[in-house]
Structures are given as structure tokens and as C-alpha cells.
Image (tube, rainbow, N blue to C red; front, side, top):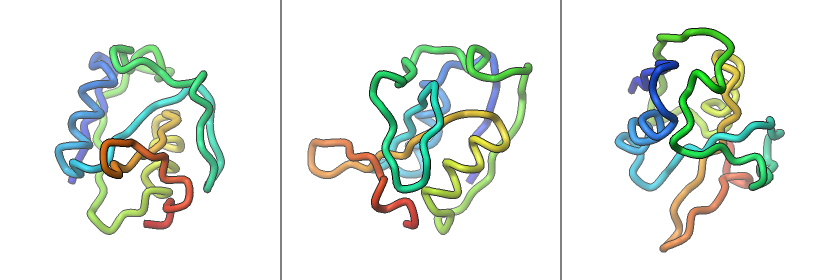
Length: 106
């Protein structure tokens, strides 16, 4: 599975691409980093209509590859290390989206 990182796109396109692979998961982005097994403060949540160029230091056109076996923690760490994006994966439970703080190893 591949997500395309293009600094000219909005976060919403990256989020839709991720959710097309995992319909019961979603990516949210924050202005500050979080540690493993910790949540992200809502006050740092970045709006979905934010352009990736506002969060990336350079003009970026890249791909991020992962598989169904890639853990939540690995995806979050890779997006941080490779692109400087502070991501948090959420999972849907009923009608509620829950941060995956206790399930980062899934």
C-alpha cells in the first residue's frame, strides 16, 4: 500500500488515501509530537483543509509504503522521521473515533 505525499495537496487528500486502505482507521495531524502510548492534545490538531506545504519544510513529492502488517506505532514514527508530520492514528469504535494510544502495537 502506498500513500502519496505531495506538498501541494491538503491534509484531507492524504487522510482519504489512508482511509481507503483502512476504512475503520483515520489519520489526524498535530502541530506537536506525541510519545508512544500517549495521545495528542486536541489544541494542536491541524485542520483537514491545511496544505501539506504548511507542515513540511520543503517542496515534497514522495511516497510512503506500508502493509497491513505495519503497526500503528511504525506508521506514526515513519511519518515523523521521513516527513516531519506529527500523525496520530484513530480507530472507529461504534460512532466514536478513539486514539490508538493503547493499541500502538497493532
